[in-house]
Length: 264
Image 1 (tube, rainbow, N blue to C red):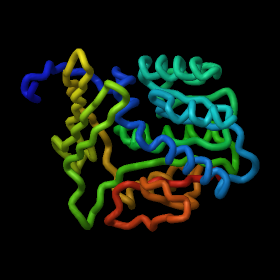
Image 2 (image 1 turned 120 degrees about the vertical axis):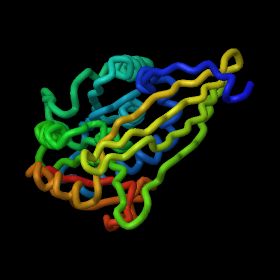
Image 3 (image 1 turned 180 degrees about the vertical axis):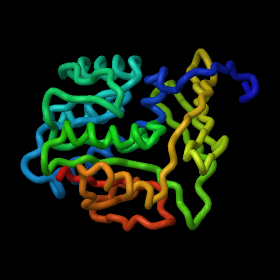
Image 4 (image 1 turned 135 degrees about the horizontal axis):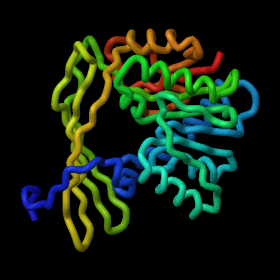
């Protein structure tokens, strides 16, 4: 079967958590190790409770729960929340995710460390929503705690990446992913990206097509936003290789950046 013969559906990739989990789960161990290393190095006090906005399928939550941490998360997609909670139950842990808008939410307890490592923050399309998120996170993280925020920045001294392709496999399931730029509006800072999952099992091959709408940030725009929230100090920055001993200096050429933010 050729690519043009695939059955195609126009649906949100977030409504297919099984495939999303496979596609974006390759760096799970590296992310977990990085989160815990940052907690040890930059947080004040003991770290026991961890929180993830836009937790998706719960891959990080369950991995951290297995290491003895109390975990919780929110997501706007009910199918992702159900998938995450089912995964926690299978692991012998209590359900820990609930539906909420990450631009405006509250939690019943305060957490020591939070993380959002794979660009979900850019789904907030306005300055008001982005500030609301940083301030909501400030309400749920204790003083001296951390928020690890991963953002794909727009470089200003080089051309941004326009396409990306990768593959993932688990048993008899294989997913080939391709993502490409549709358009970028510099005035509104809204970018649209096409994304497709080509899914192959022994009994079926088919394609999911979706469009992701994301807000763009240059390095100065991101620094200005963090300062405007008046909640966080940036204590270090890293790239998406998650090497705790290799921090990076954010400049006009940077794209993938993890901001280590500490609650004032």
